[in-house]
Length: 98
Image (tube, rainbow, N blue to C red; front, top):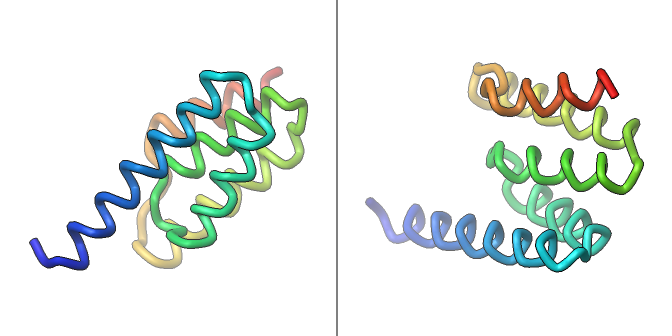
């Protein structure tokens, strides 16, 4: 694994740990802002989109959560030629049903 890949993996882990801390301490708006920033840095980490969708949902921002899902789907399709994972689809389906 290259230095660049190791550094990216550390960034992803730290970003998720920090976002999880914000979520667990009830700082959902800050968590959503954090996930939005990290998506802008690395837009191919599906878990960032998942966490952002959940935060938006808990903040009552359903339309924003749907936009996040659509952006995720587009980015994964365009850059990697794949569809969102079953976990992302479950989060999305839960959002649109409520």
